[in-house]
Image (cartoon, rainbow, N blue to C red; front, top):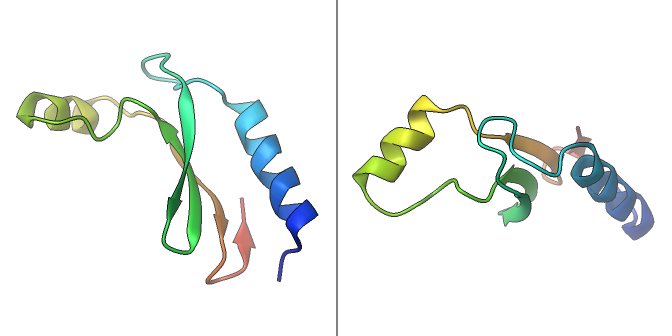
Length: 74
């Protein structure tokens, strides 16, 4: 189990290592996905078919930072 300080250090380190998307240069954001913290491009998940096709074709940043269900940190 992670304590609060460790969780914040892991999140800060992941964000500091990659603040911008490697594919498009947009800022990355941290997102809570159930029991996981994900670092992903802010341009992912746009509305419309063209945005979804672009997300598929361009490998935007999307990394698992912490998975609390399996107690795994990247």
